[in-house]
Image (cartoon, rainbow, N blue to C red; front, side, top):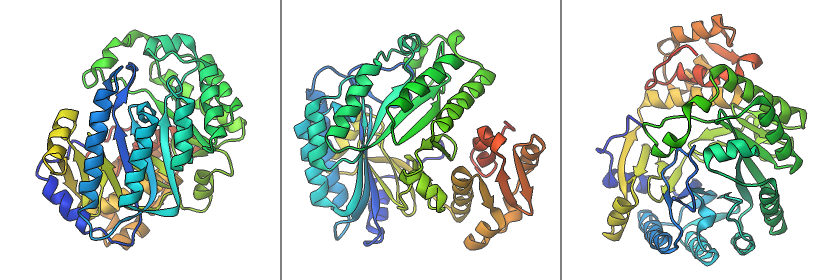
Length: 420
């Protein structure tokens, strides 16, 4: 996002929205940046509130933004996927969530099989909210677990019991939200191999359809809340790799298939089926079977991917509110994609989804010379046993999967390509 520029603002976003093909389905992402307490590891912009007034005011602005965005196109855009992220989107009152969904369905043309997904904090999830999710047609939920180790939980200020998680899962399934994802993390303070395995085993006992396993990124200069984490308690790079490996081994042994870099899914989950048939995609929301090229971001700091490039709303809620209240889109910055960006993105997506990429073939489709994109960085990775490369066809070895990001970085024109 460092390449984003304020030169791409509301006017550009309006133009890009008007240029969207009217029959192509889009994905919607709605950002709800509120939580009841701050998790010290969190890297996302969020506000801590015990009162609902701030949330209700924000939701009123979100309603208005939906109207403004929908008003840019001559007919209701078809929608195949909706994702509520945060923060903790289930923090909003159930009636407000139903009102929001009613507006979305009124302003966009939801496809019959549209997927509606939401992130859930099991510590604050209620039966009333579960009932609202059922009425609204939510079919997938992502439950934040991170770790079941009470020592780790204390060190990251996120105390939640196995019982709370089990109750949330039961509540979701009772109300028709049958497709469930768990988020786990490694690299957290005081985390050990034993606690990683134990957390993974407790998770699979609840049989979620899929799990996402993320490494904690410690950037206290960027996120003030992370300054509350004791740096000395964090595992080093070797320990992090071992933790990621034992979690992966535990999940695979339990019958989950590894998807791309950091996801695991049961064989009948749509991610596993998409990977098997070559339909797996990766966008700003992670791995998906969704083939949409367009993501419309709604809410403060939300990022969208439109035809010509990326756009992002104002980062702070106050600035976002001012723009929307004045009847303007809240776009504050963005990036216009070039032809070369497109071919690089296609190669990176192939690598991240399939662990291989036929660079010459992809370049031919986009009208580029593959020689200009193949770098010495790839030779270094090959020497380390991370990948094999033959006439531009790259295949990442299974034992080199941990370095998949480094392989993809060889094709990112905006990153420092350190070897590993």
